[in-house]
Image 1 (cartoon, rainbow, N blue to C red):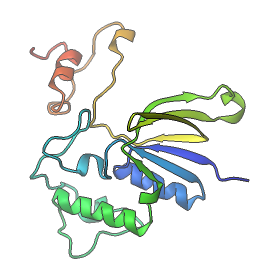
Image 2 (cartoon, one colour; image 1 turned 30 degrees about the vertical axis):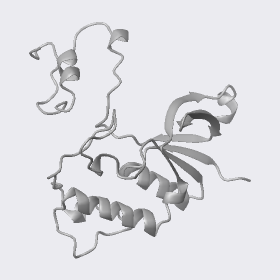
Image 3 (spheres, rainbow, N blue to C red; image 1 turned 180 degrees about the horizontal axis):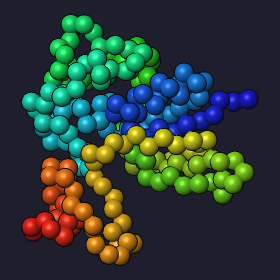
Length: 190
């Protein structure tokens, strides 16, 4: 029997973990990353591509390396306890290299659509449509893992939910998206 195919969307921290876990379980994962590199949020760019969040130049993680490392791949002893984002990216690259993850990632490939296959009730399969360099493809997967993070453009179908927002998001929660905060909060100033 062929290994079950798994689509993983995003090659940030959670996408890399998902990819490795799928390989550990004998599954056949394909990771789709819309940018040209791993790291997601932790890959600093002066001008990140549209729709991708990026940390700022001086970010140092507020979690110790012992708490943030992958359980099967400790952060090297010579790395600082609280790391600059460049060290986190170095660690992610070491992780990807150690477990040979890069060959399973399709870079510069955006997922355009995920839908249940017509035979979903009996197969449980999903159709994943992608785009890379203007070329559109469709493939069938047994499972889909969405690892895009929560710091990118939000899709909130507010028009489908009548009424008002009963609470105000915590200050700074949506600081990267001031227009969204204004749209969500009846108490926010325009």
